[in-house]
Image (cartoon, rainbow, N blue to C red; front, side, top):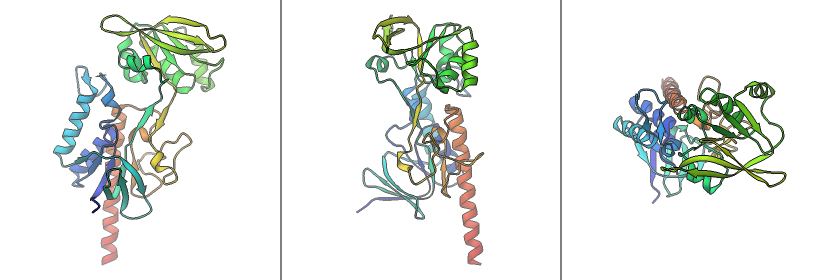
Length: 322
């Protein structure tokens, strides 16, 4: 027999956005269900030091923060389940979602908080240096490299913005790009080239993240000239990979309106998607800020939008019955 879970509000994703939505929905008496997905806790579970989340004087650990958020969500009445959703039907009411384990989820409202994943270079040495000098978010981790030599890998808007941001902390920023021109908007390029703290290395790609010291940490990058194959080394203590993000929206292609980059499109100033009763929050709809605190903020918005939607539906049903 198929196991069916029914709820007024289902949250897909258990990062800051999803759990905040669940907290607000639970406090509104909506008895939400959270389906965690393949990475419970979201990207913060892979982040060690968190220094910019409001309310904490000292550095906290990302996994600990997500454990606390989940505990709070459960304390106020959220049911948290582990499953991976493989199919979504938004054409019927209530909505119907199918999990890999055979469970069918039925919900009156759906909050999508599946997030986005940073693209990495895919080097074994890069994987080893994650959290030890290799990062995919300058605004998250740049503060830890005050006064140190840092590098940014990429050539688009994000890479240029991160290089410019890092000059708040470092007077020695190197932008590494495999081509001879940047893809970033001209106004950003003008700011980059005018900044004396930034130098650009053209025609180069990272061949190796170089580790050293005890405890082990990043001490340099080996760069390969894409024209000649020649290897050279630069000394850096922080390297920020800025080659884009991939939103987790595969499930919703053809079912919700997505923007040109694959993020879920929402109405300006809200979390409402192209389907009534479906809301999106966090990095799956935000390609600009991508911070834990902004994700949590949009999670709050999604819960409030869902609550208002259900209240309007119930009022209309009551009016029709009279």
